[in-house]
Length: 351
Image (tube, rainbow, N blue to C red; front, side):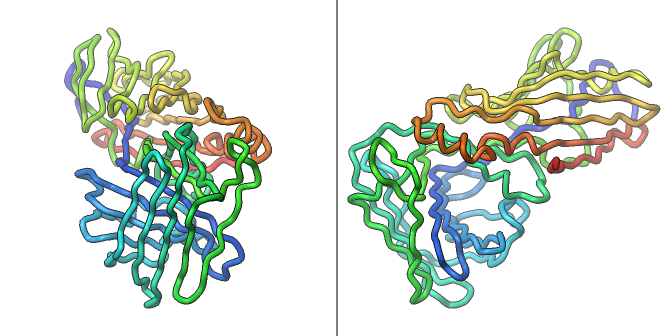
């Protein structure tokens, strides 16, 4: 494939999965299930309504959703695969977060013809929520993308004064307690976010981005703004705005693959920001031999919790995988210049 002069070739893509609210509730001693996770959507991509994930023992995940919610099985990247997968009628279907805390009241019939009920009604005056990175990527054996869920406006559900009920058929689910105090009060292992930000990096692509851009300057592709220096190298990627913003920065700037000579190698570093906060980062490298360019994005930086209470700092120190799981990810790709810049890339979990 002959490229016109000043064309830029980039094998990196950012994304945001829109979500309004998120809650995760863990349960103990049940013979089948370990947790329920209602999610609220209101956007053109995912539609409008509630989706509920139900976590099985053995790591499979059941997925139920209301009519009006758009669901793609290929985008359910949590656990060891999908179990039940069905649209259902939810009545009631309430999921709201106010200055009094979380209010969830949902019920539906599952694929086994059992009624599933979830009620969580909090009554608190505390509004001192904080950001926290959910370790969802730690549970994915064969990742299709790097998946970072930064739970802005995050908190645990207080034990005192909260109505909590969960049932599957005639069987009651018993909520786990969180082992540490939150503001000197007991809390349940139910956590929620009024503003989850879900950022993604490099989903499957069979070709890199190929585009024109002024040098120096910027161009927008699929909602992502790509910033280019005077040498047609990429300095930054940015998608979203305000609190719902994801950025990837490169130092030195990421090379334009169209300008890589045979037997040439390049390397550098990158960082990943969400809502303006540094989340993780690592190194990049690429080398060309003949018509093939081998490229790698390695995640090497632990997440460092910022603005979290002391109890959570202790918790993430004790369970270090909350901070270290991003560093188990690495992406490798091959671009074939002679075959129309076709690309084959994949994420892997490092041992």
